[in-house]
Image (tube, rainbow, N blue to C red):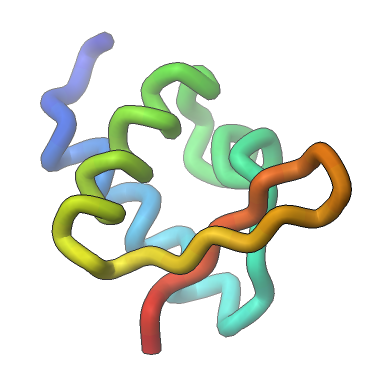
Length: 68
C-alpha cells in the first residue's frame, strides 16, 4: 500500500462524487481510481466508519455510493 487509508478514502470519495448517485462495484471503483481491490476495501471501510457510504447488494456483487 503506497498511500495511507485516509488518502485512499479521499480518492474513492472523489471518484464516487464524480460518478453521480449511481452505485459502483468495488471492481469498478478500483479501476476508476487505479488501485488494488484490497486498497479500495480499506478506503471503503474508512468511509463506512465515517457514515459517508451506502452499500447495496446486487446478486453476489456489492455496490457502493455516497450518502447524500
